[in-house]
Length: 245
Ligand SMILES: NC(=O)c1ccc[n+]([C@@H]2O[C@H](COP(=O)([O-])OP(=O)(O)OC[C@H]3O[C@@H](n4cnc5c(N)ncnc54)[C@H](OP(=O)(O)O)[C@@H]3O)[C@@H](O)[C@H]2O)c1
Image 1 (tube, protein in one colour):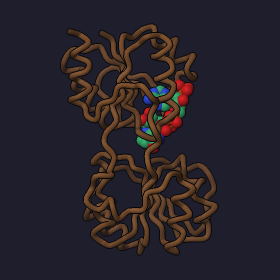
Image 2 (image 1 turned 90 degrees about the vertical axis):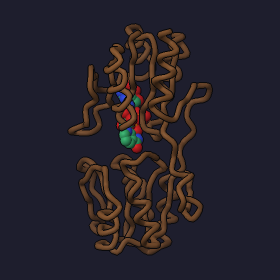
Image 3 (image 1 turned 180 degrees about the vertical axis):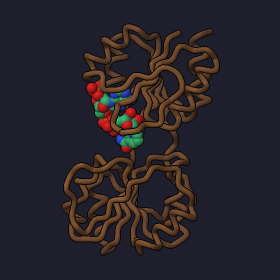
Image 4 (image 1 turned 135 degrees about the vertical axis):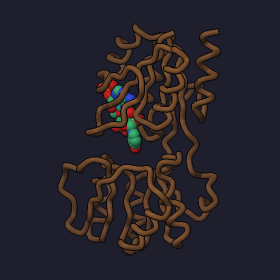
């Protein structure tokens, strides 16, 4: 069985390890957004497929697809659902649980978009700790352009941002202690995050709760309808084993 594993997440890398250890023929696919990506074990391809049509051409070489991309990577997940349905290729979505069940979650402000998060965060007067990623940064400028903002991203931003903003280049995982110190040092009043889930970046939430800092969380977009889904790597391995008999 040949597996196309759409990745770019920690779960995808863990799944690649499990499949390589079981001798499964797996190719991990990365978008190529990050300059120095953490590479999965085994075979890797990098770069977009060229939309649904390109993905369908690629699928000719595979028996199944596992979509383990980030919960906010909606375009590739939609492409995978459309392409796999068109060609009758089994598709599994591996999506880690969000942070909604965390102890402090009921006290966080849940919003539906980056723009709404920006408006809510602006109400604090700043400084704002923005951790929603490089691609969405400009969506926060209209509401937060005059406030002090600490924006943490993995790679340089490449667009001009307001002079009141500080860009911090860093990549998780982060510890609660380090997050607490960072937020204290910058006198952060509110943390803005997407509901990415997982452990690599959750320390900021625990630190914010400890310090009594407000938290604004952008809700996850809905995934494509009708796609079978599991929430952890073990579930994905079981699903794949069931297909190899
Ligand atoms: N969005 C986030 O917050 C976030 C956070 C951490 C990691 N990531 C990872 O970063 C990658 C890009 O995220 P995004 O939000 O920009 O995705 P996206 O908006 O859903 O995808 C945009 C385009 O990038 C290409 N692409 C995305 N993921 C790909 C993959 N795994 N392999 C090959 N091509 C891929 C596709 O190009 P074509 O149409 O040309 O095929 C897709 O149409 C994803 O792999 C995701 O897992 C995203």
